Length: 258
Length: 371
Image (cartoon, rainbow over all chains, first blue to last red; front, side):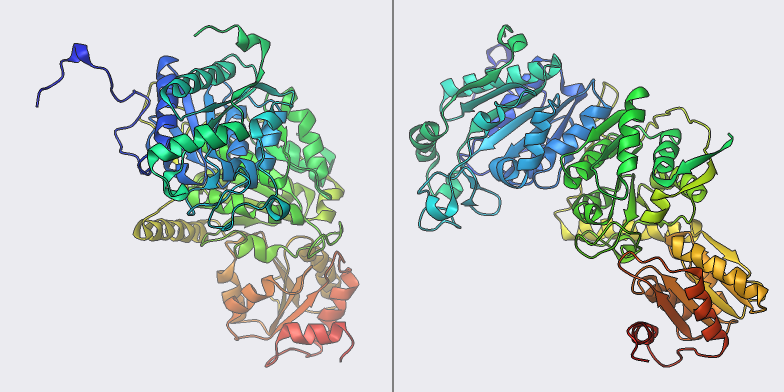
């Protein structure tokens, strides 16, 4: 086994991370999303003045992994907590990291009103179409016909309703500066996701209002798929239902070159 | 500072501002809305944070966030709104950070009405949110005392990293009285060693949460809460006593019920009846010790509340059966008149005391005409 010389270093832990292994399942894209945020915070030199707000769900322990101050919100209330922090510390960078059950179900009121008020916050929204931590129940984003532990015959839209497209919905609000959807299913899309996360934090750093990046993500454990199958599922089934794209980009941010 | 006419709700707002309130988050609900309205103008003119939240859930979680950042923060609401805040309060308790919450109580349960009540005593004093925790709860009986206790509430919350609630009924929030405001305190942001206000190049990262996944650690945390509460019980009990020195009978009432009882006690004294009044100011920590001492020397107690006898249970715990206890309460937004309390004093002075029976049953049966 040979050691790698430092000048050939191609991969290392970003400074925005703590030296802690994550608890996420093999093949889950939470780790990818976390890394992109940590890289962006490092590149923008924001680690020192960032405060993260963790949700309830699989990413409840997000505070273990980022080398920034962190608080842990009640289920769905991260945008309200973040509002409280940002309003008293306007020169800090505040972001929430929320899943679909947290953001689009129990926290619908908090996210919509934080966006409507134009709170100068960044929200990273993980859409993996189910409640992961509690074992794979139907979420507001579960696809029609998709089997979960609480829609065992597949989501029946007649009785269980339709998926909610959060990025589209929030982009209608005037307080929103940046609102896009990306996916984490392949390297190209991961690069595009990182650029979007950068622009979301640039939006906040410039005081241009609420910013949100929705990330289509995998949940191989609860979907009952291999990691590779679940990446394909995102590409073939989730991306058509949740189209990738820029839903709102404020004039002041569309000019930013990174 | 001169004495001025202050409406209770506006006095709460201005006293908090002068005590160094840096952020306020609230939601409209009668009979406390004037606090929100007053601060919507006052906070921005001082460059401080004000947000009208989307709900009481939103408001208390904004309080939670700002409290984590280490600033003086409060919310205010009334009974149904405070019920919605119970989730956030439990998290704030579990995170061990200071926050102030005012409940201008109204008639209930449910939507109830907007008339004055004290029916949220149990929610404030004996729990409210899930899990084992206690809040400091202050109960003023006049606009001046409300002002003084608002100032105290921020100090107590910070001293013990605790929730401090101020509970008063709607009549105190709505009425005007001459009162003196404290001097304006300049904002002095304490450099707390726990606040998550960004590392800012000076320290390691901090995390604030109410999670202790390991039950042993969670139990340790609960023991820490108890230890803190024991200190609070030792140091912070406050009450006011009137005519207790030679009293044969003692009335116990908090807030407006205590104040109405004082009028009745004064009249009874003029009539030669040796009755006194104990008015708890901290209903939590409850003044067990002074009631314990009184129980050894008086002939009986009358507990009077604007509810069905919630504090009565704490008085019974303190008295431990050593003296008879009577109860008189009005509910649903009805404020007792001094004459009603005086009638109770006359009844007790004539020797009608519940010895073996439940004072609440006796009171209920008198209320509905069963006796």
